[in-house]
Length: 325
Image (cartoon, rainbow, N blue to C red; front, top):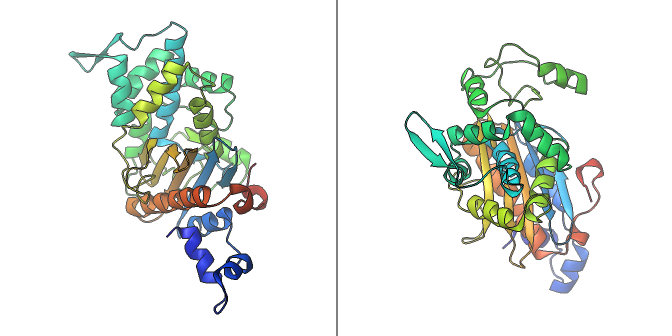
């Protein structure tokens, strides 16, 4: 039984026919359910989802920047494949990988998206021109609220300095404080799960916007679009995140991201009615990675059930800033 149906049944008055129960009960909106899940101790969830066939969208903390971690590799892939489309690159061209090996761009792309290989990601990143080139591509694509500032190697290096530790500092409250936090010179000493470092972040809404435009073929050729999502469908990391609570066999093309105190998963989930749901769930803080993964899985299942079992126009009620239509 879906989470939404369970909640509906629990609220129905006893002693009446099933039709009256359905009409009389007030079904929680998706936003209310997501808000309950996201209200976790010592942590925060950012959620956005859009039905690409209807355009209906639900978000929670959708405009708040979260550390992207390796989900930024979707943008790296997009920037490189755009270069393939315009003749600048070729998926068969070779790049040096390590001291002796040479791999094709296609092999690097698969390592980056399927296994989240950081070395492969940085080779493709260097080929397109670095973080600035990725940001320029995102800007041309019309994606706002997502930025890349460091190579993956640098991001991981900075992350390792505080793995397992929390630094008791206050979260920045204003845009100015967030911007100033990005200039800290003690890289590796501050946990991005607890400090509002603006570098290498995305809002959930921006990530879903990027996924939606990619999936609809608005940014890449048909061949490159099919190639990208075919590779993402073979991702083997994060089995307990977006996929964790979905019915077996549900098609999911996704990319995970992980840092100390940070777990992310973003992608396209195919619903039973054939619709495609672009989803981004970012989790930071909480006690363990297991807890973050579990909350990502639960949020994804709420979205899956909500967009599958009911007409989104009747379930996505206005919740102020938490809903974007």
